[in-house]
Amino acid sequence: MLTLLNISNIALIDELKVEFEPGLNLLTGETGSGKSIIVDALGVLIGGRFTSDLLKAGRDRGFIEGLFSVGANKDLKQLLVDAGIESESGADTEIIIRRELALNGRNKIFINHQLATQTLLRQLQPFLVDIHGQGDQQTLFDATTHLDLLDTFAGISELREELGERYRRWMAIRRELEAQGEEDAEKFQLIDILRFQIDELERAKLVIGEDEQLEDEKRRLNNVEKLTTLCSESFGLIYEDGDSAITRIRRATRHVEELSGFETKFGQYLDGLESARTLLEDLAFSLRDFADKLEFSPARLGEIEGRLAELSRLKRKYGGSIEACLEHLARSQDKLSQIERSDETEARLRAEASAARDVFLELAKKLHRDRVRSAKKFERSVESDLAEVAMEHARFQLQVSAASESQLENTENADGLTQNGIDQVEFYFSANVGEDLRPLARVASGGEASRLMLVLKTVAGATEFPRTIVFDEIDTGIGGRVSEAVGLKLKKLSETNQVFCVTHQAQIARFADAHLLVRKEVMSGHTEVSAVKLDRRGRVEEIARMLTGAEITETARRHARELLK
Image (cartoon, rainbow, N blue to C red; front, side):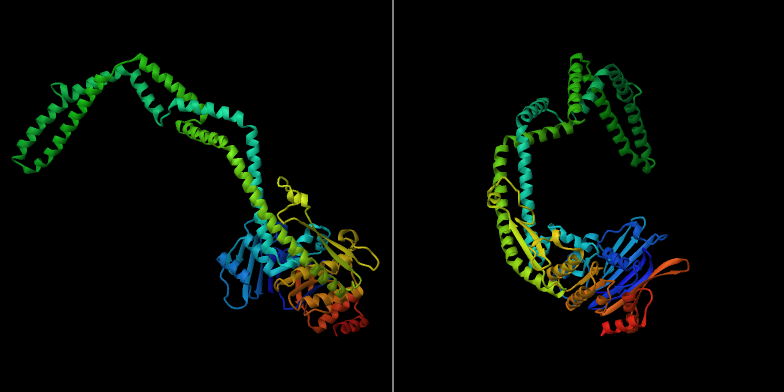
């Protein structure tokens, strides 16, 4: 349950700290006092969407913080463990959630003081809070929500999740098969293109680095005369001339040898001089051999230029480099091989799709049987609870219709099959004696929808596990004896769950275990929202206000005291 809600700089709220108790917690106050702001803040806290206009005007940061105490739940524990969130090891788990909101969009989420994601927050939400806002009864008019309510009541969420995975696997194979069919339509044209490109690249016998080597050779052939001159002059200076470098080093070596006989420290340079002489001799012979091989060949130059032109054309066509050309060749070979094996691939995909469909249908039929079996129990539970909210004569029916046999037998068609199975579920309703059952959306009034929503939501989800169930103005469109019946229903629900309800009805407020008055006041030139827990005297005054309006009479107070008895 939610034990503490702390709000700062949200909408009209500067600072607000609200403590809640087990049982039925009711928020009352004048219209526009800020009750729904508190509900909206709680919705944001547990993963709702945050927009910058939710921040208080003139503030660039705000936060919402909640303290939850949750009974032992292995799924919740496992979720926290998988997320690396530390929690207490006792029977109850305390969870502190904090959302820091910023105008610049840099929002942060903390769970038990550890940074967390909005995805994790939304995964935690079903274990903590179930919020039903002012317009939620309208969702009952959408038949797509009826299946979800039945499945929640039946407790088959794991089977439905597995079915969804099987359906997505089947659809993935179908998409791959459809893509294969599209490829087959273009197969013959593509084969000709691929074979031409592969033949062209294979004939070229490309070698990585060949273009660079050919460019070097081309430069040499275009500069044979200059290279010959440089080699000849360098060879003379180093080795052949009478005053060559080698000659000078030999003479210097003899002098240093003689000098070292008188001063030993010069002996250490003799090895270096010998190394220098060896290096120069090696260079000289390399220059001579290179010059001997230099020969201008117009034919070879033509071959090189022709090859470079061919390489340039292929590089422009296939990616800009020899490496890219070779990669294109490999991809084309793989693609051609796949196309040539397309018949085998198509047969394999068809077999996989058929097998995946069979597995899906087996699970879907099991889910169908579970739904049909649970539907009658759901109907009885709803009709029983309708009597508790002053709808004694109402009838409720849940119709489960499955895909036809022809749809199930048509292996090429997925009509009537969805990730939720083969079923369509719709609620039928009659509020009065003698009226036929009709689709809910056609016959339920606003007040009837409010009560029916309370019944359906509590019947479907109240027994899953205890949590905080929030109703924001569930009493819209009802009054008098019906309001009292709704209050009794909320009170009964609060025996197993913490209930948090915003109401304008005194007949509902009388049942509160904790009654909070929300007020909006102008202080020091700006508006502030506060929430005060009422004692018995305060409750008498507030219920009297709810009964009479702005002017509270002694008669209204006496009536309020009677209600509280």
